[in-house]
Image (cartoon, rainbow, N blue to C red; front, side, top):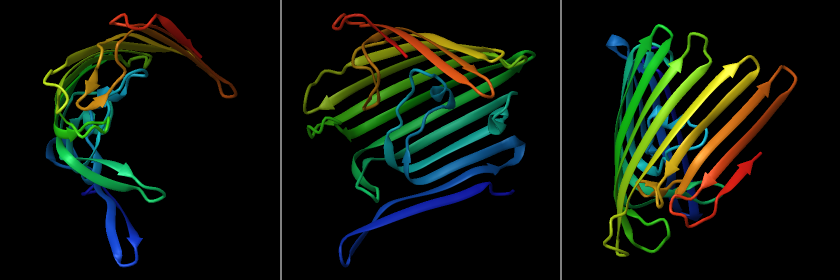
Length: 271
């Protein structure tokens, strides 16, 4: 009750007798209460960089969360701490060394050169028929390895912001706008510094047993979040429908796609 939830994991491997090493470890503390309605979540070890909560709500586009060996902390107050409607604030920070998981069946974390850092801020404001939510995050990758395995290193800076409106009086409608901007340079390959941005808007509502969602998006060529590629050179819209009863469930989706640069033809995806 006074310390929240505490957990940890540890794995080790030995390549040969007498040669044992730590593969990965993580310590987590979730929901530690403080005065003023604040709660803290902390993690240490092999973790992910993290992202604002609003960056994980889109059914189509989300921010990558690179793996790292480091520390993260998140402080939430009011409605954000409880995961409910109502006024609240949130603060987020993370820092660590870049790395990748490898090995089977025991996963090993290989620390690489380079570092990640992230700072985030979020807030929500209650309304009579729902609430407003806002979030922003600034992140940086410094000297991380190129994902193509060329031996080059990447320096990148990213900025993400989102605004969300929820109509929760009837608990049936949401609308969210997202904007991302990223700039990166790859040392050893090119002196050019490509900048790319992305915009996507998603909405959803529920009516009885039917749930409808959809959105529009425009994603520049070479779009990435820090050093991790994202869906890029795309514009279009997506529509989804779900019907659910106690015995039956159906889902259907349609996506219309076009290339921002014109390098690929138009297309569609349906399921």
